[in-house]
Image (tube, rainbow, N blue to C red):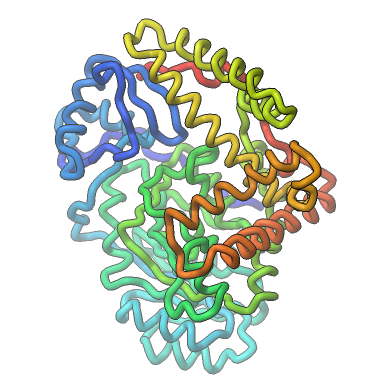
Length: 479
């Protein structure tokens, strides 16, 4: 039976001494009357009170602003991902246990426990073959050890640890991860927000970067959620966070679903969201993890991730839609592929005019509409490339193979390759562009093959089917 998630408290007020800063990616228009950004991304018309607070936040910049007496306004800005809390003091009475699921790999476990500096740590040995060595490592670092006689999976291991501890907060850390000094206490200040259920640090590969895969993973690890703070929710820029490193509020956590061997972390985050809790990502704290440099193991890991898609989609319909595309932009791309650039320009112009009308009576609405439409077109082009590299990779591969013969294939190839080359140019990973491109395509195909295989077994096309947004999706919302 799936563990139930309790609702957040009725009193959602932020503490007055909490300091918050506006997300630097948020922009305002029309003298602050319009705010653009948030999680999910939106265009919001601001009421006068909210407009004044946002102006103060913009003036303060990275230094932030105390919530003070405008608690309702700040609550709204935080809930919509426009603003984030800055590090502050933790409550002195806060207790936090660290739970480390492990299965063999004693050397990795040793590095993990050494980084925790004899905190309140519980190791859950999930059916190790060499149980004695795992026990010796746990004893050496004075960690409490619980053993499963047989392997039951990460969800069951974490639930066992939850049942055996009583602390107010719980930190999950995989045994192949190394925590920075002061973690997880360095993240407990986030829980001054009474509606926050969980917060995740950034998880990046640890050195050395000796093989091509390790160098590639330094820029494109599946566990690395990026360099921007995010409010985590389905449909947002960041839809989930992994439990490789995650700090949670015990009272919010019903537990993991032990029926899931893969995707149990995604399922938990989405159930927390559905129950009304917030989940946050804070990249100012970084945990490192080991990279699988064996090519077969690396490809298999990507395939395995993909095999959870159909199960997760059946539990959370619509959350795993592989692409959400604008009907305007699809029409424009189709016209470009058909060799009709003038027609594509007319469609883009019509989309801009339609959005400008929705933004009435803003004085600079046409310029804003043009910027939003241009960014949306680029984003949808990249989303199509993402789809053709992953869930639809056989079609993408066919497009690359026939790029000299078909205009449609050339447009598809541009969608596939341009975002990857842009990534390499802007990130400058320690790997040459040819191998970066090849590994990016292999990684996407491995994941996509897992999605296709699992969808076929489950007799569903939902994880393979993109959604098309109608023009009304751009209607601004008033705050």
